[in-house]
Image (cartoon, rainbow, N blue to C red; front, top):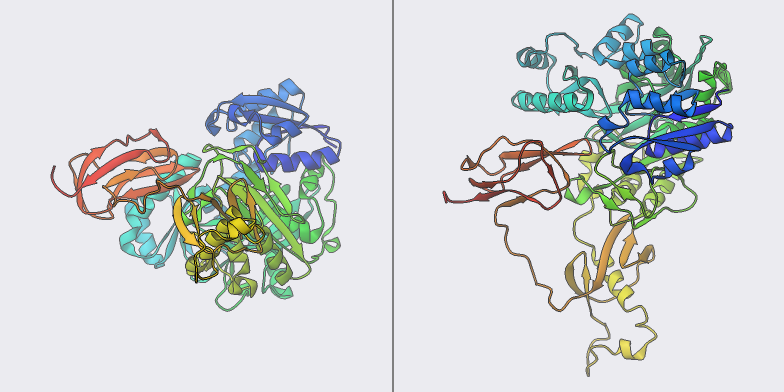
Length: 617
């Protein structure tokens, strides 16, 4: 067994690997950027090495510094986690060349499956069904447009070297293709250093089914059944579950056998995931499930597979990398119960899911839930890395039980002042269609109105905030007589501010609400409140045409200049934060009177970036 392990990653996955390594008696070494020095994953490791500054390109992606850290600490092996360098064949080869053990897929397998076009060609040769599309070398916009037209819309543009939803765009009509292609290529180049794309037919009722596979150095390959990752937003997974709803035994056997064939075709070793796209319009059928890609690493959603199989997949990785055979044979693996995982992100659904950063003054989770998190209360969410705060993982004897527990877990999560998608997750897990298993990748878009909380507090929240201000109203006769007059109604009206807005309401308790340090938490939402200020203005003035940065980030495109006449809705600039692009558009027809945004510049939330006026002056 490996005796010492350097974890070439950060946050939640670094803590996850450390937990299993410690249980196996393996010494762990963390690496970190300067801004991560106080993070839990650094403190929990046996040893830690700073490898650079905050940007990943200056730290977690520096292969030379990672190898230097391994040599300096006497590490025997390197585990790359997921993301960063986990699927970088050059790094894997460098690790092996340095005389270290690589706890990951063989470099040849990474290369074979890392480029989506080459991987599909290899799968076709192995008899694995793939979706129709264009995988050609000609990457000219004209050729790509011609191929998309021939495939028929809607189509999906995907970065050849992509993953995690980056460099991916759905195009519904020919007129939208050019802009979507340019954005996709730009994002792919920034994320992967490779702007090549492929075109796929977009399935109208798509289900995202993936199979966990594992191979060892002795030629054995097994599967650990399937996961359903259909609940997505902008191609990013939100809720994952195992097994897949509606999967019968025959279809499961077909798709899992195809996954094993795919892994064997590249002599796979270690943990991997074969991803399939299924046409769910008539339920899951073996003849309507096609190979999409292979992830040659551990997946973010691996805990749901661990839950239903009662196996520790990180332990499997470490044992396989040590040369041991797979811990279980195929016939010894089975499914028990149902598991679901929700990704808690630092983002605000009420403002279009814009990223949220800042201190975590409050970060509390309900009991009875597996929480895989990279941060803790009192820490910070920075703009430098992925915005995931935690994974909420639940298990039940049935799917309905698991869904109920997930809704309760998300609803009972408390985070402040960083905004999160907790309420959104709670609503999704409790939605009748989700509970009934009627899910596909369009679920969130279809039900957005019911899932996305409003920017305004509900009357119940306002009433609960008022009740928190006068908690003794029922027992204190002086407070209870506030506003008393002869023949008045018995109701007591309280002036309260919630999220900075004034309200006059009757106080009323909310059974599932909690108050922590001037914030009321209920059903995944968080609302700051207090007594109404005497100088509070009744309303805000109409906008003056100023465009404010909605989030901290970097300006990546400014296609306008001062003095240019623009139309309402026209794109003025593009920001990038936490690997996401956000376009700012003209609020009305007018002229760009002021332009402070500069391409490549970092901006802070609320900064004035441009101003539009209706006239020429």
